[in-house]
Image 1 (tube, rainbow, N blue to C red):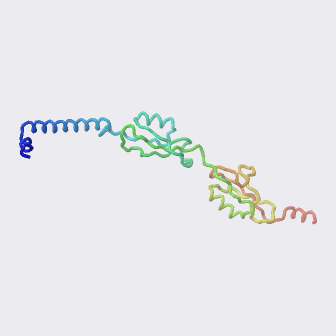
Image 2: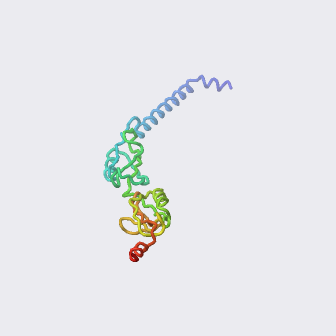
Image 3: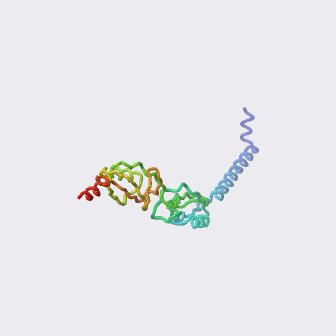
Length: 195
C-alpha cells in the first residue's frame, strides 16, 4: 500500500496522467470537429414553396436546393390545383432544414376518384338524392315520365346515357333521375281516344 501511494506522488505518474489528459482533450476536439463538418452544424437550407408546381419542376427545385424528396400517396383530387401538381409538402415552405433533408410531397391526382352508383331504382326521388349525395354524386335534373309510382326512380342517366346501379362514376358527377309522375303508362292516350 505504501508503494502505491509513493507511486502516485512520483514524477512518472504525473507525466503519464498529463499525457492521458492531453490525449483525451485531443480526441474530444477531433470528434467535435468531425461531427461539425459531417452534420453541417449551423448550416441550413430554406425549404422552397413547391405549391402548384409540376412534379418535374419540383424535382429540379429540390435538387437545386440540395434536398431530397419523396412522393407520398396522392390525395383526393382538388380542382383548385393543376393535375399532377404539388398540393402539400412537409416540412412547409420557409422552414430551415439541413442539406440532404427529405421533403415529403403530395401530388394532385388526374381527377376525382370513382365512386359506385348506389341501388336507387324503385326508391323515392328524395331518398335517392340523399343516397347519391352520400357517395359524392349530385342530382343535376329530375325528369318525370308516365309511370305509376309517383316520385319513384325508374332510370338513371349520366351525360344522356342510361347507367345502372353498381356503375362507377367520377366523384361530383351530375346525373339525371327519371322518375314516375303517378300516371299509368298509356292511360292518358286511352282516355283521349275514347273521347
